Length: 111
Image (cartoon, rainbow, N blue to C red; front, side, top):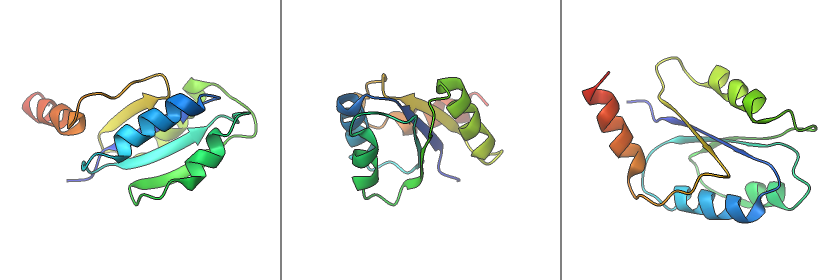
């Protein structure tokens, strides 16, 4: 099975980005993480670039903040047609371990 595509979009939320990406990357789940920083003025981009995980497949920083929908559409166009897609932005708090596998079980049960 192709690992799911996780779209992570952030703008000027270093603390939330650290919390959420740490929770995501500390899991043992398989996924492809694609990150967009919408030109944050804090140290968000530096933090993103410091991450070392093979599941991070793309990091992009916009020169201008085009908004969440623009970034999300860019990621939707990037994923493979048969690939499950999850959108997680810096305002989402991940607390449930194994949440990706749980979603995938539901998707398989109810295609």
